[in-house]
Image 1 (tube, rainbow, N blue to C red):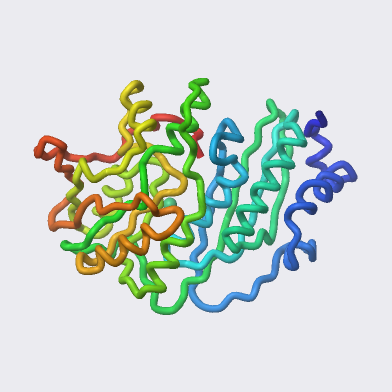
Image 2: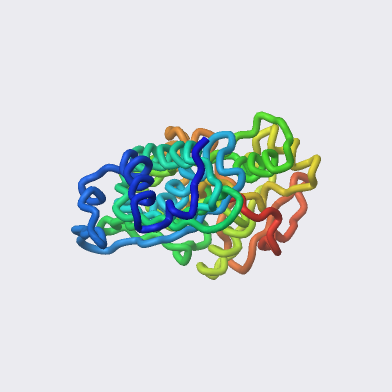
Length: 327
Ligand code: MG
């Protein structure tokens, strides 16, 4: 199988071949095809702008790959601000020895995910470094925030409801299983969340706060938004959805799904009176079938959980990194 060599990172003929055979083949669009020093974009109004780097190993896993992930991650961050994602840039750092066939599959997966998400890849860069055949991708994205939308972690008020779009820990458990060589049916939930905010905004729901439940897990992000809004959150342990197989996996390894990352799950905070309507809309989307209300915003500070037995325990942020390179 043909491999990446240092010359692929040169500005010369070998680099141009890679550009044409892989990136040019999959990433065609009117902006990128101009091949100038920078993409020129027409944008009006407020924009959301985000960047993220992806270093996950293995690069291909059940339910996705680093190509799909690097688009979903950036697109989801834009969506969480109420933006309509429009443009993506991507920077590749390829290690010498990477199979070109693998790269081709990953780039194809990126292109397919971008198409599904309705974003254009408008600029890119490739560097080759010494190494062992790995790759890293950075994506940045721009989305346009339609007039009248105000979504922020600082918007919550006592009485608001917190809805989670589905089961926790799937992506984390999938990557960990692959890394440990454990055979099971756990799949990453890696996916674009667009249908959920689109449905909520279309129905006129007052969406106050949205967050994708990524690194650090639900426990960490709830603490972050509680702090920004200067409120407290009360969670119900029995309401938190976890897939049976993920639950079993966590029990064996002593992991807590509350601190495990997902790549296709989000929370939405809405006023209490919008709870039922919002939940119904979310449940009607592909990504949100298993959505449920997990708790409420109260006055005070921090996050507490009403346990299975009716007691209360404080939910703190994640300290340290349970598992590096899950995204
Ligand atoms: Mg995020």
